[in-house]
Length: 443
Image: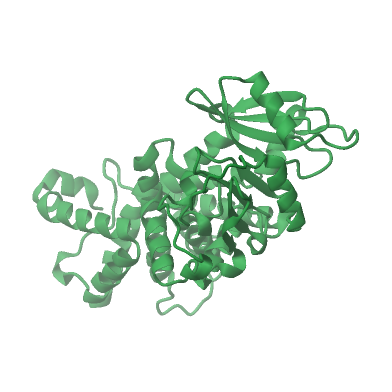
């Protein structure tokens, strides 16, 4: 009887979590599926901007930027991205009023091919929906909360799937396709979730480092335990506590790396051409970008961003002397940062090329199928005029083991933990005390 009470309790949590968060998971899976193919989509959508004819030797980057500034004198260039192939345009990213633009430049003659505002870039919009539902900090919290509850959905779902005195493997490891109605959809939902659970969990855990609460917490833990990057990177402590992510587009592991200050000399500032020459002397591929100095004490930030994070590097360079003030490479990352960086590349579909993209798409489609089959299963069992949640079995009380499980997950996933407390308070203070609401909720 106690086992029945535990099953019912787990089922109720699984049900309500699915009802509340599965729509968000569908949005994340759809937008994630699209964004996986960002390079291919952009090459088609913006081919007149991105593609050029190879006509000799390119002009210098400084001359390219001069032409950008002449074309948009009211703008401020903040970043330069060199062409990665002989048939590709260079890019200058700039602030134009309150808007962020990418300007495409023919590197052979400096012709401005066009510009795209971030707000007009369809894929940038997809990324914003995927990361924060176009709702800023609140949206970011909702996405993190949904991803956290997806972990709980997988864990509770596996408990519900676990065979109980079954002699046949039908409905456990393989769906009973000849069954009709709810049994068919239950098998599709549960069996598919079992087979894909580890892959979906991988997708969730590799996406959480971008989130506001969990991502910030894991970065702080990594830095505090020297599993992010070591203090020995500097001969002297940096003079600035500004994190790199506020002044440059850098890899995840370098986002909290403090930005040092340039020390002004009488010799004047270096040109971007000298920074590019330095990058070529270091044998960096063209998978890098250069953020320009902000103010007299600002630094050049050279961020090497290949598809595989093992080649990542972040360098802060004194804009006057050219001295490398900070250099952080993948080998400098601690184990935590290395694992997360590899996970991010997998999540974005970059780590092993097109097959990584197809692999990610496969997981997203599986997640969409699992959610839709769950909706159909619920709709087929839902009584008319009621939500149809699994019935509360008051006489069995709460399972201590399940409570401990929820507490552990709440600690590991802070936003989920906070929401668990809120749900318990709502249940205790409101739901159980309003008979009409309780009757509508329960089966």
